[in-house]
Length: 168
Image (tube, rainbow, N blue to C red):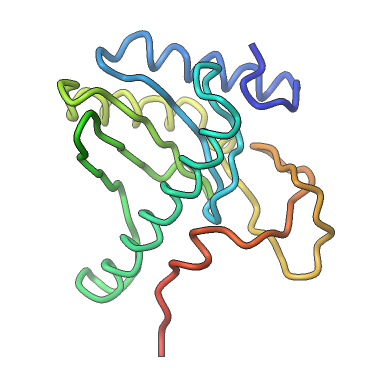
């Protein structure tokens, strides 16, 4: 049941809890925890590693754009509670899930977005500090892996970095 490839007890527990989210949320297909800069941290097993990496980059880009919208048109704090993208065949919901981490869920078109959001919020509250990802720093050795707790980070360019709003 290790949806991440890291095989740690914390990752196994997180995968198990995300699978529970999918089971109790009609229409939910995939769940993913990602870092702010677009790295996959943990995924449900039905989501392949390649598709999880793609979803992580997409979700980070959407969150980055939402952050820019919040800076320009919100209260100026840059805070984003959630973001949602509706597309033909499904919906992508993203919520903040701890410092530097996000939870993304892909659903069918018919899923109740309110119920999905509620269940996502409950999961985030359950896990609290376990869903944090330390930001990567320039000069860190590139290892290609991160975890949902405090371990090695990677240095790569992601969609979130490329799409990040620039401030003057």
